[in-house]
Length: 164
Image 1 (tube, helix red, strand yellow):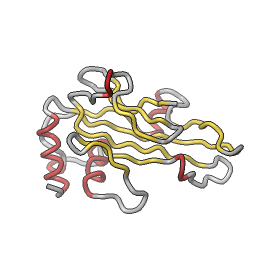
Image 2 (cartoon, one colour):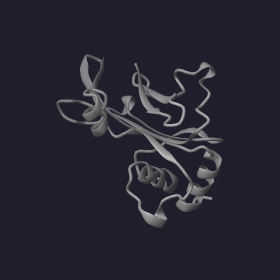
Image 3 (spheres, one colour):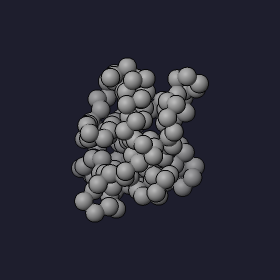
Image 4 (cartoon, helix red, strand yellow):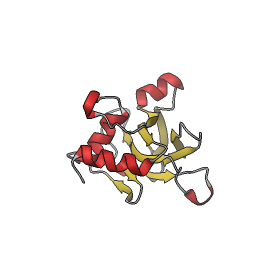
């Protein structure tokens, strides 16, 4: 099943979804050709699957991704977080202030699992299709960072994150 991740605050298009069966990040699931929203600068998405009885993670059903224009989608490791994805996540979750924030105009779409469930119960944490007869559940954290000039925002965020 494809679950919506983030809607563009400028044009209202669904920018991405997660196919929770594979798992995989699906860009622009409602757009012909899967072309990304022109306002999209970054997507940072995590689908974490777990056994509801033991709370052990289910690796084959879990995925973490970062999407940027030009680089496309890359899977993020479960270990140490790279500086770019950490900075992008901090911007999207409102964890930075003052000079640490990018000065370029931008907006955030999407939400953490907790905010998703508060807004629409069952959208942030939910059961998945059974795997080998075992119950599996997951939670979805996903944000998009948008701008009228996404290339300028990407360059500024790369500079602020110290990655070029």
